Length: 353
Image (cartoon, rainbow, N blue to C red; front, side, top):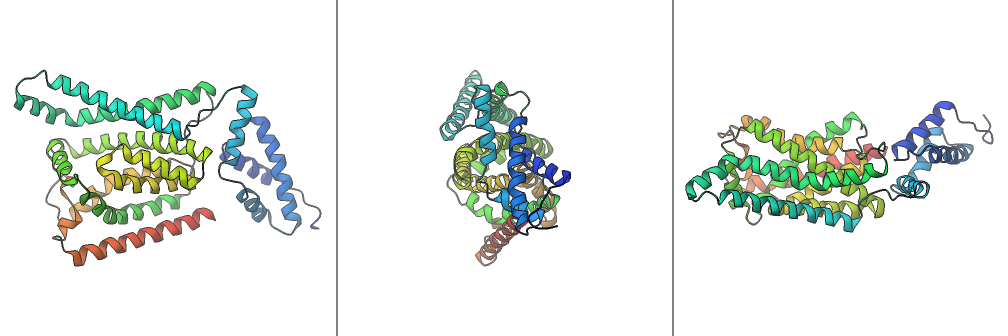
């Protein structure tokens, strides 16, 4: 075919339309206009000798991050006279502040109930027996309330538009996440166990959670994880990506994520960056939820193979397992960090192809 005569097939046009939909454009009129625009742009590239695949990648790679989503949002605002709710930096901060206030109210309520029992020993026993359920209630209200507000705001504008991004991702992404979680377990540990207040908090957690079934604890933790991902990646990061660069959006969302668990601020902040990057590259909550859930499950799978004497994994640390031997521990931390960085770099290249 001569280079000056190019006509896209129906299948190629379908791929363009599908890509536009994946970028968040759902308004039919806008979809058709963008399909025409991209067909012309791709045909021009193909006239220069490029294949369809090469021209397709070049045209879409030239877009700024979330450019089509912003176009969709502005189109809806003009056609419907309504503002689509995507939390900006201030709104995200207010949502996190609301979470703190709710947590504070729950704590005051629990204390008020407990103070009704004058016997100190009975009161302490009540706290220990209900510690997990109090934590679950606190988590559901703290994360659920701002999450419900965000969903309500979105659905108020469009009942049919999806609130969260649950796009399918290549299977290899999950295969890469598994070793990333395993190796991250090593280098993240010193950031937690050597941070201020960790020992006291760890002892308190162990004493108050030991009486509960590990399976029940895991299930409740997974519930909180899912709510956290829906809020911090599905709502806050998604909104911030609309109004600022990906780096700033990931850093701010990670900061908010870390503030909700201040004793573990450093590990939560770093974890938030990893999760934010993964969400930004895949535009899906599936891999971020998978990463967090698998991080909870792996200790239960691995610890029996290292002759861990306790059923409760909070007892375990690699620092103590190697008898606080720096000659073993330091190389382990450094090597695991390097391997994790290599895995992320490989995943980045795969996702960019």
